[in-house]
Length: 243
Image (tube, rainbow, N blue to C red; front, side, top):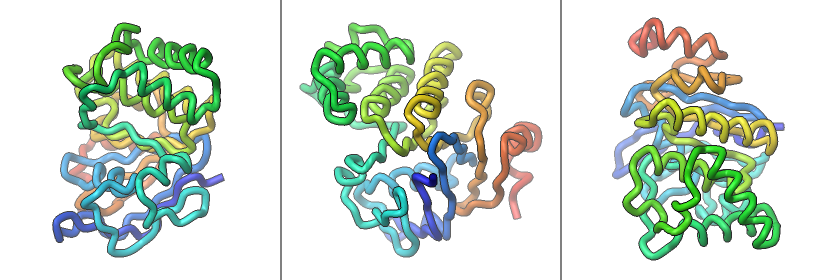
């Protein structure tokens, strides 16, 4: 079953065209990598997919389980099963991590408060975050690596059908990378989530190999394949894909 399908997507930001006819799809229980250098348009695809303000779709569609969600607000997309781990998530001053995560787990997993706390602690342990983060304000004063791991916990708390992960491997150490990989495996294997990993590096693929790989340059998909495409990028770099 195809959970996410993007068809011929063209996007403008501040009247500048960023994406040019992007088409890709992700099936349930599959991990897809979208790779490309900085500035290729990868993050734009994620922000557009979740309905972020300022990203104008001028052509094409975003379909979630064959339903066109292109015009839906972010909240409705989230309720339908679309979640994202962002590179630079907003800081929520005055909002405790524990409170927000508990509410998300209760809502999306449909469990009691007691069960929600158990699941929340399981997710924290999975990515290697200590329980004391629950008393902190959401993303306030967190290091880059802590933010990446907390975003993964947030996505797990939303029990998504589709998870869009924006450079989860950027700026994290080896142990953190392993925890992030375990979170992706849980989404894939236990939840049947369709996972899109946006990255410009290959190191996460050593932990979670992609089922499919796309290469983006200049806002266009220029190549697609399997895990072998990641190895080709490692060996030849992105310049090998320039037309």
